[in-house]
Structures are given as structure tokens and as C-alpha cells.
Image (cartoon, rainbow, N blue to C red; front, side, top):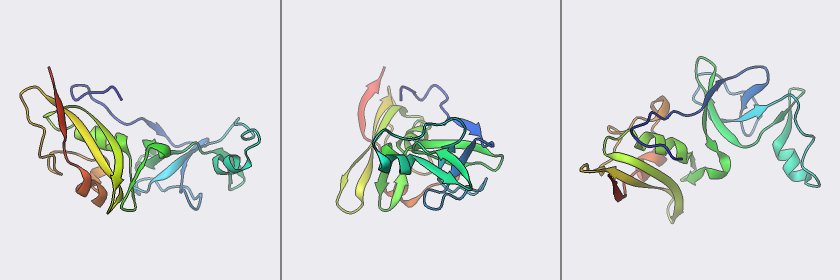
Length: 178
């Protein structure tokens, strides 16, 4: 993303309706509003029949849920109490660390809240104990130290602070913004 700390950045948000739902990844049950459950966005309406000569990918992407056919392209989201969908990120970009799914966009948004962080990027790196570790690299604001990122310095969406984020967040200051 090209966003920086001085510009207010928010995750994409839109409402659940009769054509857009957030579905549990394993059961295809609709995620309850306000539950903080993470599911996958499903869209119905005029959608393709499937992938040409790729039945496996077709089955994974196009699912029949309660008699309605949905396209589920791989975007993870939650549903706020008011029915607003909050996108967390694409599943293919998700970092699986210690059995938890961490969305780079969510970590980047939170780190940019720190007054010493100008910009950042988050990637998954190999880790012996957790399989993958969350590795942020930050560009600090000139004259400010962005080290010491902690729960008190960073606001997570929905006040969530999962254990994977607690053990993974550290600031690596690579350069200074001028």
C-alpha cells in the first residue's frame, strides 16, 4: 500500500446485503454481525460458471450455500454489529503464524497509528517456532524513534490483540522520512 501515517487510512467497508455475505470458511454458515468471527466474502448474482478445465479451483471458488451460488474469491472479513463488512485482506497474502491468521494490511494500519512511524510494510518470514513470523519494516518519521511498539502505542481494529500479534510486533527502523 502507498498509505502513510499522515493520511487517515481505513479498511474498505461495505454492508452485508442479499448479494454479499461473509461466510464461515469451513461450514459456509453466515458470520453473525458483531461476533468478531473472521469469514470469507461471498458474492452472488451474475457470476461465472467456473474456471476452464479446473474443477478443483471451481469447487473452491464457487459454492452453493442454502441453495444460492456464491463466488468466494478469497477475501477475509468480519461483520460489525451494524452489518458493515470490514475487509481484512486476501487469504493468499495472509500470514499463518502459530495457528493464527494475521493479515498484513491490518498490522500495517495499526503500526501507522504510532506517532513515530511514517510508513511500513509487513511480510511473513520463516520461523522455527511459529512456522511463519510477522515481520514489519518501518520507515520512521524524521527525528522520532518508532521503536518500542507495544499494545499501548497501537490500536487494533475492534480492540483485537491476538497472541500472534503480541509476540510478533516489533519495529525495524530501516530509514527516515524527510
